[in-house]
Image (cartoon, rainbow, N blue to C red; front, side, top):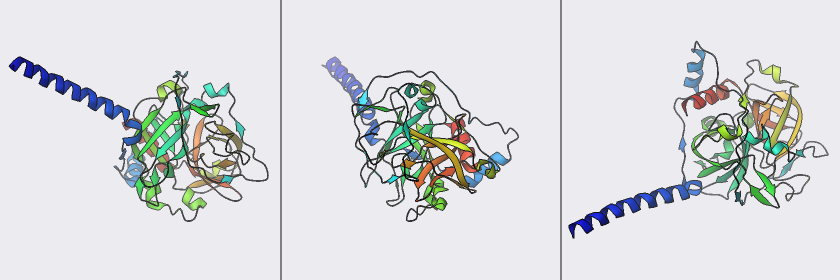
Length: 320
C-alpha cells in the first residue's frame, strides 16, 4: 500500500508540473502580464552614457536569412481614421518577393490586449534579437492608466485570403518600457509636442531576431541634420484609399522627406493611417531615425530618435 501511495504522489506531482507548464504556455498570449522597466530613471540613463569612455553602441542593423514557420492566426483589431496628406494615398503594398527579405521581415504586426477596452493593433520593429521599438500608446493606455495586458509580435506578417499568415512565428512581450510616454503625454491634443514622447520598448520572450534580422537605431546629435532627409515608413495600416478590406495583415510603405524637426519629434508628409503607430521611420540604409505615432491635418508626426531613445535602446539591448 505504501508503495502504491508513494507512486501516486509522485505521479500527481509530475502531472501537476505538466499541467502547470501546459497552462502557462497555452495562456502565454492572453494572460501574460509584462513587468514595467523603470530602473534606472531617464536622467540616470543619460548620465550613465555621458560618462562612458566607450561610446560604441550595440544599436546596429543585422541582416539574417529568415527561418520560416508555417501557421495561421485570425485577429480582430480596432480601426482608426484614415490620415492621408494631400489628395492621394501614395502608400504601396510591400511586394510578395520583399515579404521574405530584410528589413521587411524585422517589421511586425502587434496584436494588443487591454483590460478596459477593445483589442487593438499596431506596428513594431526589431532592434535586437528580442527587443522591439514601437509607439508608447501601443503598450500603455493613458486614459485608463494601465499597461497592455499582452502584446504579441508577428514579424513579417502578411495576408492570404483574409487570413493573417505568420511565416516566422511570433513572440510575446514580457517587459515594457514606456516611462517617458506615460509621464509627459496628453492625448487630448495630438500635436508634435505629444508625438515627441510617444515611444516605448518591448522585451520579447524569445530571440526571434535571430531568425528575421533587426534594424539599427541612428541618433543625430545635431537634429537639424534630419531636415529634408529621405526616409521610409513601413507598417500595418488599417485603411488604404478608404478601403479597410485591402490591408488586413499586409505591410504598406511610402517614402518622402522629413519636413520638420524639433528636439523631440519629426514631421513628414508621408501617408499613414491607424495601425501604423509604432512603424519605423528609417533611412534607406535600414537605420531608424524615428517612430511614427500621430497623424495630423497637414503633416504626420513621429518621435525622433534623440539621446534618451538611443541610450535606452542600447541599455536594454545590452541587458535583456
